[in-house]
Image (cartoon, rainbow over the protein chains, first blue to last red):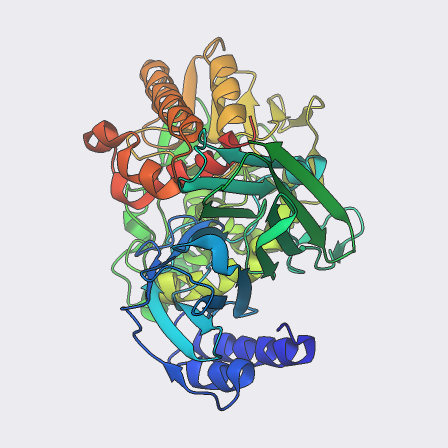
Length: 263
Length: 310
């Protein structure tokens, strides 16, 4: 779903918009983004009967804005949400994540953390197994003051690169349980500076996080440079038997990190 | 002749900005012999306060002046420079930046004509580079006309952790100390040996809620070390300079972050969320700090993602 050429086109479009209108883009980007990412497919807007998107009204810390998407209709083998696309309109790369979801997840409850440096719509577009598209959105105001989408301690983030955690409450077989996968990664978005080389550091970010239970895929997320440093994915699933929850992370330089937890 | 050019300068500034904040209103106070500061207001930066929200000032030796933090806009920088010129004829040899935040560095360009050595932490250049585009975009709007002339000037002399540098203003030695990640990853303090006066930059906020843009654990450790310092005067990054109030201010700031850390650890342990933490953690502190609403939840958010890795 990530089309790099298209993404670059969008980046240049959004930079143009940014420089022309500073922190308050007056022309909504969504009509352009919609065509770039979804072509002429119809998207049902305000799909509040299917999805809920939660985000703070204000990006308290521009580098870490928690975003949660929940479904109101449980997944079934016949009818399920196949993908949830996250678009942050005014970010340098608006197409921010694509969650590929298993029909066995039950009610969807997924969260991640994004960089949001100016006020923007944040959108979740559910793509059903029949191909239909349904959207919900929230408006997030920018943070004030000295909050910048830059990392706080680049040296610490790099020192921990690849370290992973799977965190969860004690699960009960047959009951939904919430779990969190975090991977330590600086998620360089190409706007960070290396003082030694006096050059901008190439974008180096987590591209995919795949989560499986007993080797059966639960969800997989394609992520881009909008995702915060130390990417975190929180989700709910129902273990049907004892087993192993595993996460496999791939970054843009082809590095692979894995972690698992017996439950 | 000097008087005339000064008033022409003031007139020029007044005309160009149609200011709500006039140069003659910009006051500096002598904290200890030869050490002056302008106390910032506890407000968000705006065009009407020209971003003058942090403590900025200068130290006068027998041969030279050192500026410590240059102001929250080019305009504040030019007022600070004027205040220096009104106080002494000695040249401005150094502009020291305690860290990257706009209220501490945006006045740098106002001192360019003095050709000073700009000094900061060794990680300050990287911090400026990482934030420059974002700050320029945002603060052009926030500060309006006060922003005009603002440039991002990186230090040419830097201090490294465990390697303090000493500069001499003429019978007056300043010791510049670089810290490991605390308020930011590049905090620098300035100690005047003659009077035992410490400029902390934003390692200490008094009155105004502190903002964590570095490491909560690192800052707590640094604050604990600062408690044992033998000082006659201390100038915090925000709030009143004093000989006897900073000890309780430091304790209050340490208590605030310790409380945040304790409460966030409990929530993380219980697999709680950032959202939950930002609603629950430290809310009893809300009447203890100015601008609590603006920065508290940010502190919780930023601390949360760090404490997840303990």
